[in-house]
Image 1 (tube, rainbow, N blue to C red):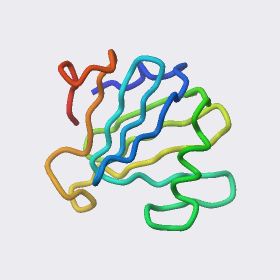
Image 2 (cartoon, helix red, strand yellow):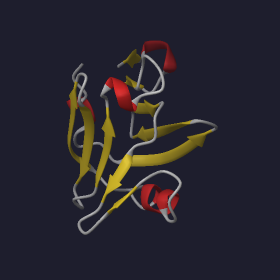
Image 3 (cartoon, rainbow, N blue to C red):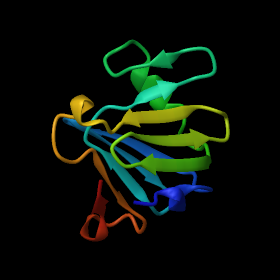
Image 4 (tube, one colour):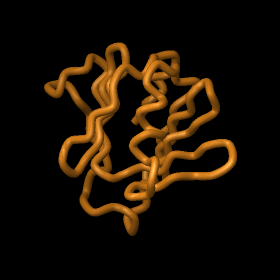
Length: 114
């Protein structure tokens, strides 16, 4: 799956929904069923660690520089401020058959799972 369509989009909202995460851009919606790591210039933050939610929310208003999905390996979303949202897609790191979904229009009806 190609997720490069979110490159150039500004993150508009971060939504914590029970046991998954939604990242809303100007149009697209990226849903992650596993918690990604936040890679900052000097350290990384994982779900459950202090400041995890603040680190994600601080990206609101930032533009995506590049986004890549390597099936069975990883998903990365790099922002213009050099912060990266990274999610392992290796089978041993996931709790279910899908790691997430992308809708380029923002509608759940046309989302593609990965």
